[in-house]
Length: 129
Image 1 (spheres, rainbow, N blue to C red):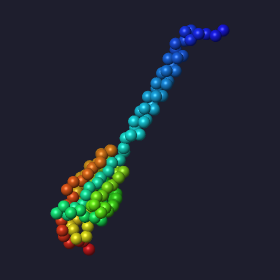
Image 2: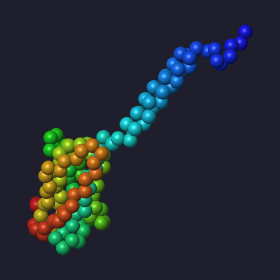
Image 3: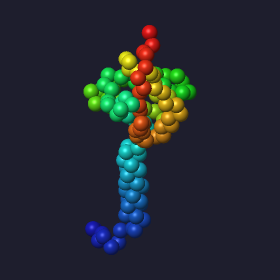
């Protein structure tokens, strides 16, 4: 004979709901973890003492602990950007022909942080040979 839904054991349906709830909980937790950035970025704009931007400046980012280096050039607007930078403490060196080298130490980057370096102003000077 067929049983009606009223006579089904309550434990069977509650176990199904518990398993479904646990599965959904894991799915939501894993999706929220995907949104976390393990890296950050460092950027800035290179200018001279008068505020005019300096295109094509050489920008070197050095990890203080490992001494690993990454380099780039400032664009036509003097802007540079290092993406996907692991959390650490860095030194930033900037050089351009006709200007003295510029350096910023102890730049601390934390997970998911985007650091913009303000007030990068290169002074007129003799370039290194």
